[in-house]
Length: 227
Figure 1 (cartoon, rainbow, N blue to C red):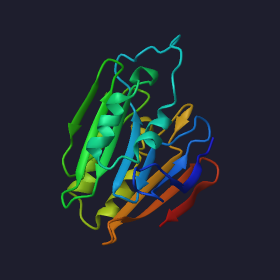
Figure 2 (tube, rainbow, N blue to C red):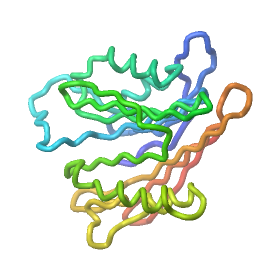
Figure 3 (cartoon, helix red, strand yellow):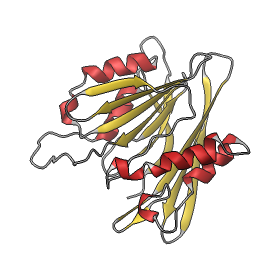
Figure 4 (cartoon, one colour):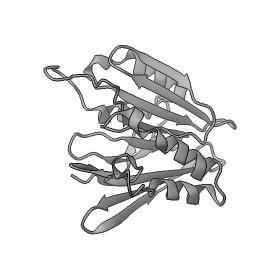
């Protein structure tokens, strides 16, 4: 099922009336996998696929991981978001990796939180560029994507956004099942979402989100939203 296009939504920030964030909506499970707020916070959630896989059959009361970001995107900082996350009942969620980008200061901050059903591990991941990858086949199997990211984005020539576009549309002909633009039996890449955020000098960020639905039969359709 295709996701709903990115839309600006009201978020709760104590003492900040009219606070907003933008995200696409997962129409099947609810929630979202990516969001960006006007106050300089952005989040992306990836499924975590440890090996051997964790058997969740028979586990009752599981919530969609897509509900995590809407609960946290109103936080004033990455640190506050992590504090909120630690206070949640994480046993209600399957394993995940949450990447939070905090752009409110001169030095960009990237924070990674990993929930493996046993513990929550939070660590700073530097300023970037940084790449995270996951696959239902097992996260370790898509590590070649990290080497490709270094080759195309970090060490490549040209504008960074062009190199990122090239990375997200890359497919190894003989390894489509682990490619960034992935395709295998009963699964494939269904969308590409990009976020661009620039401080506007008035304490907020001008945010644009581009969502491309990739359909096997008709190619790519695009929907954009910007402040």
